[in-house]
Length: 347
Image (cartoon, rainbow, N blue to C red):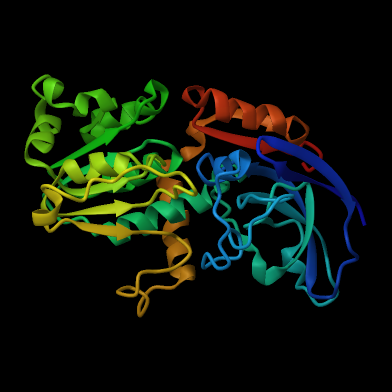
């Protein structure tokens, strides 16, 4: 069996690549050679910076009991290169997705793999966790025809969420992000779908009158539905302030150990605004009688076919350059949208 190279977070802002031998294949296992894996700019940066909470149970196997040294990641795409004796030969040479840490090879049971549709490239398939998150967010928000919707944060999850929301017959859709690169990521779609993208300073009262069209109407009257996807706890105050009476705020950010003072006094007390915690590991109880993970994955794959998010890959690194990749994301996030690792020894 070959050796594998796996990325480990060993301390705040410290990563290393460790080489280990893979175990022999069991009858019900397969060997996967990784083609590419995507960095999560939200959750992985909490791990990189040492800002993750120590949760005994996070309702998934990925984020529970996190402690250094830690192999972390959940967006691996690869090819099945060898199979155990009891595995159907149809699995051989298939492209597969796995919620695995960044690793050049891995041995795994087939029930932990997801077959990738033939219509999608490996790079596109790397976005599966984020598009599943976006689908979950939209389902939890449950937009209504004619609503005014606001999305705070245009990282990958925010961009995917806005893309899904643009398919609804909304009155207006406004997105907000600090970084020009991310505000422009939906520029072509914005012209076609009438999405307005603003920097945060346009949310301030003195500049509201300078906003145009639907963005001005939304900011004056308040959003019916707001998504807080920025990763910044203080943005929750903006979300509450910009949401109309009896509106909903869907909180998709995981703040980790970051803290900020949230103003739940004043107008909030009488606002009847609903704060909705949304996380992809589970399905809303209101939907779980009809929806399961398999059905949601089917929706996610079809959404990837429509959106084609590989256009948002801004950087590609070899796994051996992982330190450079995380430093870039930590120190110059304004230059990035999606960073992936490429494993050249596979194809």
